[in-house]
Every structure is written in structure tokens, then in C-alpha cells.
Length: 138
Image 1: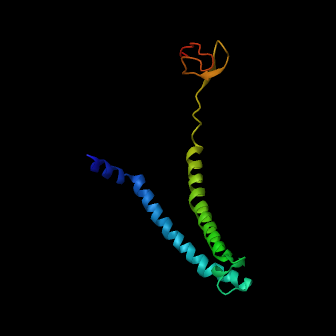
Image 2 (image 1 turned 30 degrees about the vertical axis):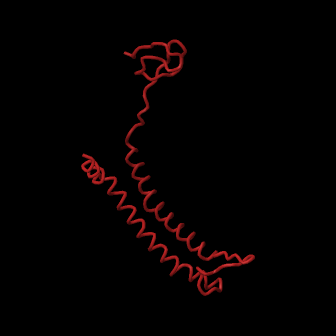
């Protein structure tokens, strides 16, 4: 029945984790937007001389360019990206590195093909270059 398959899909751990991540990410983005709009850009407007930085703009031939709003968005993106990098990506990379530290790389042992002298895996029955039958290594 399709409904049972859908229920099984939805209740998988990675789907639920993804949904939680999206919700938390949206909430975090709102906090960062507020931080930038209410705390950071007012400090910038003190030095820039404008009252409300998000409304800062210039006009060319009747077209208005809202550079203040764009800079708010750019600062917000930078804060979110830096937070994700320093608090998610780097710790995961460090944990992966620590987990792999004790393990040797699992490269297959190699031998030479008796026909073309190319390197082939020990388990190969046929050379991948000249297609000669080489049999398994004993």
C-alpha cells in the first residue's frame, strides 16, 4: 500500500533530521536578520550619517538603488555562513579526521599483469588494460 511506504519514508531518521535542520535554520536566519538590522547596521549608519541604513540608496535616471538593504542582506549571509562553517563544518571535519586517524587506507594490494606489466588488483581475474586472463593470485 502506498500510504505505508510514505509513512516509512517520512519516519526515516534522515528525513526528520532534515526537516528539523530546515526549521532551525529558518529560525536562526531570522535571529541573524534581526541582529544585523537592529544592532550592526545602526552602528554603520552612525559613521555613514544616514538615519536608517536599510533605506540608504542612490538614484540614477529615476531608478533607485537600495545599497543599504543589499548590505544588510550581505552581512546577514556572511554571519550565517561563518556560523555554519565554524560551528558545523569544522567540528564535523575534525571528528571525521579523528575517526579516520587510526584506520589505514583500504587500497587494494596490486600486482603486475604478466602480459602488459600494468598494475592490477590482486583479486583481478582479468587485466583491465590488455584483457589477458591472469587468474587470482594465490
